Length: 293
Image 1 (tube, rainbow, N blue to C red):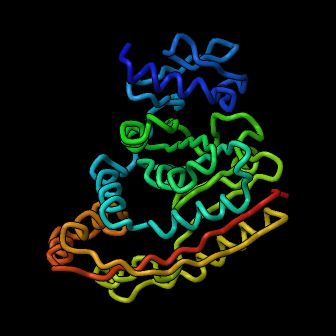
Image 2: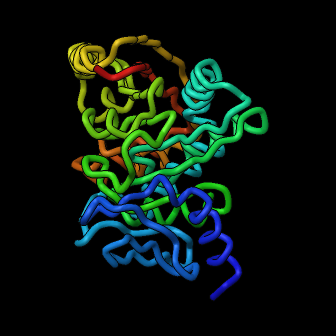
């Protein structure tokens, strides 16, 4: 066993109480720094990178290694979602007490950049246990390699998460699919769900370049907020809208990371990334719900 795998197994062991078996729903524990095992003997091995795969069959997605590498490079080099991450950290700071530890789940974590940035903003004032799950094994592998020294990652379905009831103080989802019922199940009493959804002008320059008139997204954002609000006793909605100017290398990363260009021709993509620079708009609603109904 490598020292890296043992250290990451120890980190997993430190928060093993939040896990439950996805097959029989019983509690789980780390065994011999190699696996998570439940009372019924169902076993899920810890990979050498430190993550656990809870899916009983592989799931094919369009989210590949190139996409996740482009996302992280763009986030790191241009702080593309920096204001969003900082705002989410500020929300958690406002609702959580620094004197107690906070368990934070990123449901749909991708390559882990959002969770890592938010936990960094929270520390050292807060003691944070950050856990991320995603259906994409490639994304979780990337997250574990990059951030696995301090956070736990797993391949799992957000609609059937391998966690006990009422085990997280915060469940967040940033531009990812989510399951309201499951997120509510995972919250401790007084816990908070934070969901970031795209508004009308999100990446409007990309839409206009490839598709002409940018589709309006007000209805989408408003309907998502309405469904979200209906599930909580307390609800708040914050909008963040800002522009980033991206040079040619970052435009190429942007094209690789967004599903908007999946059906675009190679020629149109090449014309877009050959621009010397371009302004790109990030338009996000952050939905905050406390005490699920």
